Length: 125
Image (cartoon, rainbow, N blue to C red; front, top):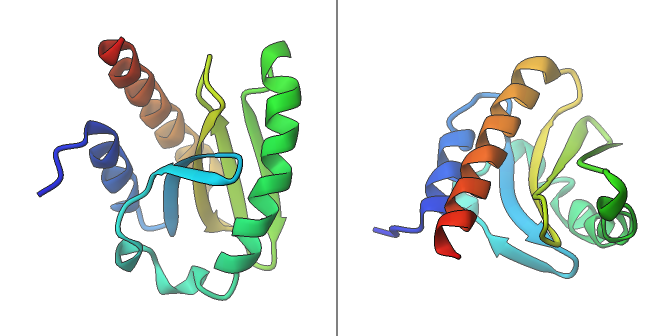
């Protein structure tokens, strides 16, 4: 059993029906990711494309996070990929959801998860 508190936050997010996959990532690297067998199989048709596209998104995050960028989204096929930038880091909480999902509810859950991750990271300092 893994006792990584950030992994626990991610696994809690995966319990939501409309979060197909999630991770904490940064450019060219995943920082924390649950076992991919826990991801919804519906994302497998876009998984490789999302991985490549994330590199480009992180270039934008690196450029604009210092001036207040905190959330980004892009759509790919029938999915949306949400990036919630973790303040004072080069990391983001990333989730893949269906394009037609209730984004209001998901954004609240993502923001709560981001706050929990920030608290965990601040506790490690």
